[in-house]
Image (cartoon, rainbow, N blue to C red; front, side, top):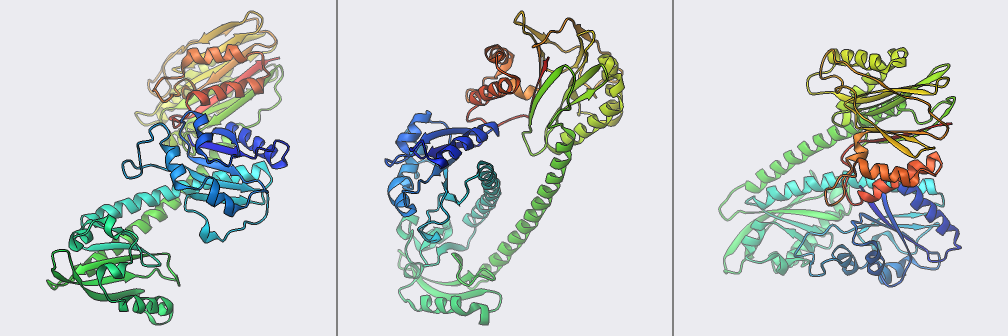
Length: 546
């Protein structure tokens, strides 16, 4: 689960502070793990120490109008030492050299319409600056876009690590340079040839490291200024004689690739090959790198296509899971569905009749596209068999037989179905391998757990199901239906939230109205699982009899 630390303006009467308060609430309701603290000029460490060392992915800062961005960057929070301390405040002995640390990303919010610093002076770990937005919904939308963009960057970082492993095991020398030619990376073979450690050459001018003469630098600048007009294939090469620590002279041919369509590239890749032994390995390596890039381009296109198709599948699934329930005589319904992936395998629906209504909730084994396809099948089959729900056991038997003919082995689902008659005040239910559901009697404070009455669906042909009845349902009684993602949510210690904690939460919050009741329970589940990624789809439905 993505975690946010929101730092608000300390002025409580500020209009933007009210927007930030609303933003925090919306983020919590959207399922994000969110903490909030007030703005301070003594760095982020004292603020973060108040949230008990919980994992923070993003720090969102409301920048007051009285504070200049330039001052904020230089004096308040954007100090790398502060951020290192933040990530290690439980163990201050860790440093970036001893342990790989993922620093929190920073997002700045400001009601003003401009910033007082040029973009090149914005520190690297500032993920984004949102200015001129004073609408909670718009801010939340932008934050979600930032998270999605970050997930794509993570994939590109994976590709970079893959290339790094390749070049570290290669016979070529490879350097990464900034536009001022300072060295930001050197592979193992480059260090071996130079007989130097990375610390000795880090941030030093590449040309000073490989040769005494600066002629190469002037010539390279010339190429950069004119390559779009007079240079073919965007490639520049030169040779230099290197004297290493052992006083051995080594002749090296260097190749520098200039990104196509870029006048002043921000980063340069320099590949060198020792030609003392007369060989063209560098060119072969260049071709090899080109093949890798082409393969990665194909992978990127495939992923884009997959994401596009996933969006379409998500829209289809959103269409079959009801967001707003119809007006149903004698009941109120409140529900929420949170898939683990973009799409998932949970499903629920309501069927309204003249003097009664039916409700089903199901959970397909697995996640993602296969589970979503089976969910669509369940929707079609349940709609066609809705008339049978007056007898939940017959409905379940019919659905199971049809699914056994459609599903391939290893795919199955659990389901809970109920039928309620307004006139007789009787509820009839059946359960096919579904977790125990909960029925609450208001007058007596009695909690009933409705156990499974038959096997899972789609696994055993011609299965038999029983149904049971709950009679004399009164005003204020509640039916709580859910999938196993609710009670199987884990905390950092690996403990399950479980049925007992759910019942305790129901009893504690029962006096609240149906919406607040639902949200309070979900908040307790989120707090329990703070810092742990969601491992299953979650559906939670409350039916109140009125």
